[in-house]
Length: 132
Image 1 (cartoon, helix red, strand yellow):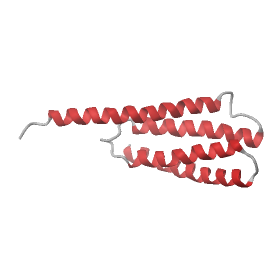
Image 2 (cartoon, helix red, strand yellow):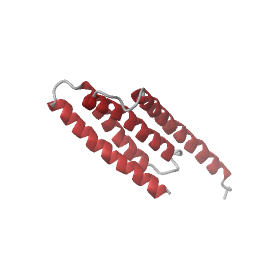
Image 3 (cartoon, one colour):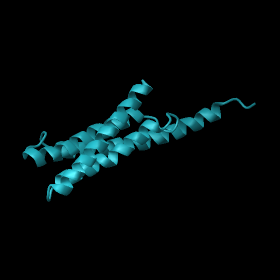
Image 4 (tube, rainbow, N blue to C red):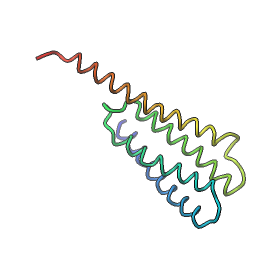
């Protein structure tokens, strides 16, 4: 399961990186297109975050998969809605971008909770070790 979750995070990191660079290029060469620039920036910010989650050992971050999935879903909704509006004038669905933003916030909070849990559980595990 750990290999699948790490692979998933790495795959989406690569996709978000590629889409972010492509979106930034489009925004730079396509005139005044703030929505594409914001969607690209959001994708580019979350690509290395997903790589970091994939690279961290489980004893440093619990909840890696739920946090990563929230970051993936939130980025898809937020950036996807902005891109869709820019290209078609239509939304993915009503309030997709705000929902994506809230999911992103939740994902980052899961990173915090996961790190705190890992620290607390790691300390407890060390306390439970028999003294030699």
